[in-house]
Image (tube, rainbow, N blue to C red; front, side):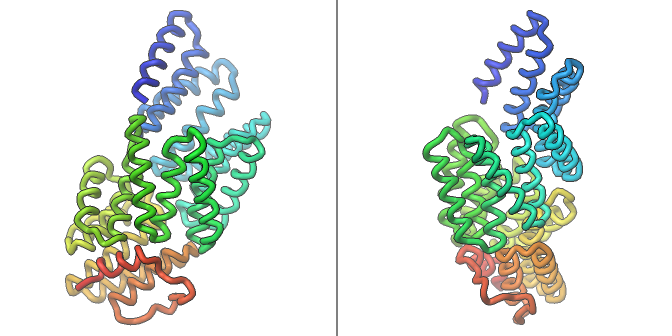
Length: 368
């Protein structure tokens, strides 16, 4: 990415010498993409805003659509979900009018991501399947990878494990046969963590981190997955080291939710409760972030002798999971409830066994 930024800087200088406003605007778009991959969202936003303003003045609808499409993803990653959805729908509608199937597919993917984040799993599943079908018709493998990422997570959450396995295998095939960088590996790592498959999640997260580092991109997401995967394998000290590296750089809700679990597993109850508060008070937290945080709080409160608070936190985890239909989160929450109260929760479903990794997490988090 550093090399790409340098080359685009050289190109920008040439366009400036020529007085080519359109060329400079497209360079701004490309440099915004680099900033986005580097997790420098303020710079990406600034460059896109400038590009969109210039291209709008030139009447370049395609260019404006591309800029606002990436802006919608920035709004999503900054936790501005309503604005991300508004932009995505506007861009998709205008792209459809222009016959730009690729742009429509990317906005379908973003809308699936938004649904998944909010815990609206059926719309996430159908939206991701729609995007996958579009990108397959276009034979666009980059777009396909983007669509498969929310698809595999929705499949895991809904208990569609055979379908999720097939989607993960498709992502791995794309990782091995194409030039798609770390993105397929990131998706598989996240899905494996979600299922409680710690060794798989760790292996894929390690690979993704190495590939992201090779291109100079941000690594916080797979590092958080790695920390949770280490915890799922009972390696609390390793998870603490990995998590401290993450929280030093990125106070993201996912980071803090994972930190809550890891601190609780380590018996660092005050830190676990502080991390939980950070998640629950953050509007950008996903439903799964919140479930993780409440699970951690239940274990910490029980260890501190606060039985009533432990039960309330476990109930909150169950309620948040139940509202989404995520069978993995439900199993995690109801097992936590049983561990801290000694009673089975009425919502517990024996037909959904807790994965080995999550069983380990519950045991560690609720240990007295």
